[in-house]
Image 1: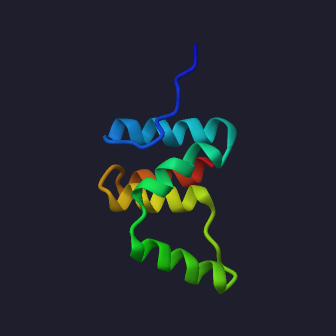
Image 2 (image 1 turned 90 degrees about the horizontal axis):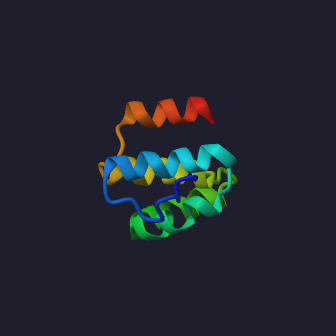
Length: 85
C-alpha cells in the first residue's frame, strides 16, 4: 500500500512525505494544495513578478520555498531535495 500524499503539511515529517510523493512521480498536482494554502500575498506578488519576467518558478521550487518559509523544512533539506529531483 502506498502512502497518500499530505495535501497541506502541518509538521516537518508531513512536509517530507509531501516532497517524497512528488519526487516519486513529478506530478505538480501533488503540490498544488500545499502551495495554495501556504502562500502569502507577498509570495503571490513575488511569484507574479518572476512569471512576468520570464523566470517563473516551478511548482516544486515554489513548494520548497513555502515549506522552508513555514519552518517545515530546513535550507539543507531543500537543497537535498533539489539535488534529487
